[in-house]
Length: 432
Image (cartoon, rainbow, N blue to C red; front, side):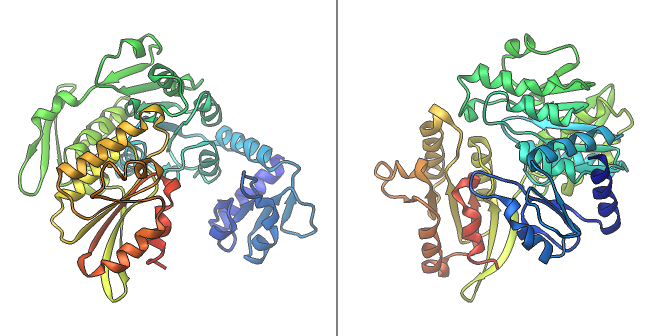
């Protein structure tokens, strides 16, 4: 197998190609690996990959073609290839998990390292389950000094599998909340599984951002793991018309952070800095804390037309938690823009607390006196009668009709919810 692994890297080096599981995303000279899921079997799309001029096609189908490589089990091939990549990598691996903020922290840490002249790789978007992790590992830049990954779990022992695959050197837990209990028995069971990130056999240092009673956690971790709590710094954050800023000390040195993006960003910036400073002593603060490095509004802005009218979508259609949805609603509400519409998708994996957190979001928009609100998904829809003055739909399709009908009063459209609501399809109705 090592021979085919080396061929893959020769092709990647020659064509700057990516490894993909989906032929719809495949570009000329990319490498396609057939992946079987619950709903589809990617192995059957080998002809599509060949027609799109893939440089190599790896499937469990025996077919004579110079670019096709047969393997009996593509899942096993992927697992073994990931092990080969991790074994070959000479840099250090950084892993991030937590209840909220994984992608934001990952992006900030990536920018910190990059802006301090380290060759740095980061995992793709918010792909943080085992399949997403494998995808990101196989596309790693082996010449990078650091590789930064986010890890997400929905059930018991998933973190064990992720850590055995990645084997990170430095690990950060951004925080643990009881808003994503989902498939876990209780909050302590959730904590236990999050903390398995520190079970990496190559762990050099771990850090936990934790702002309440940590006695239970301290009983579960080893001496390589430290705690941090920056909440006590919040009172020192200053705000003027254009900026947020804070002065703070670390190892008797003074630092200044400026951001136009909010106090939440300041907290992320401080934690990111202190985390990296714990394993790279020569990191300079003033080299990387620009606004483009401090990402609090993760969603991308997409300009398009509905009919003849130009509108802007603020796209957060891929993920939502009670904390992140609450925060982004407040941020969008404070923006000095007119004719706003909020399209809010239901949040998943909240277990027995699902009703509580969805009602909290509904009450938030009522208290803010927001007028144009659309709630989408079964978890919101069940409260239609209770909050009968608001708009509730089971799926995104009626929301398209609403936008078309109300377009004269719409310019800016905020879209956020868990991926399963398919709110990205709503945006694609208008962005071709």
